[in-house]
Length: 73
Image (cartoon, rainbow, N blue to C red):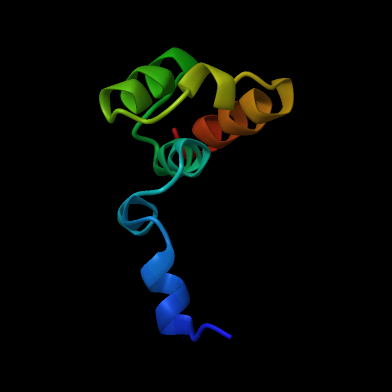
């Protein structure tokens, strides 16, 4: 049975360095750094996040992110 140290050593290193696309989208929406969906998508692409349109394509996701940006604004 692997120990926690062994399990973390086998995880992809990039996962420890940066959030997923959707995690980063929610971070940016909460922070107030982005105020619109186009601005948020542009920022994510500039940060070289993966599959931005796919991750932000769902209606519920867009609604949640838009509400967070409005609250943070």
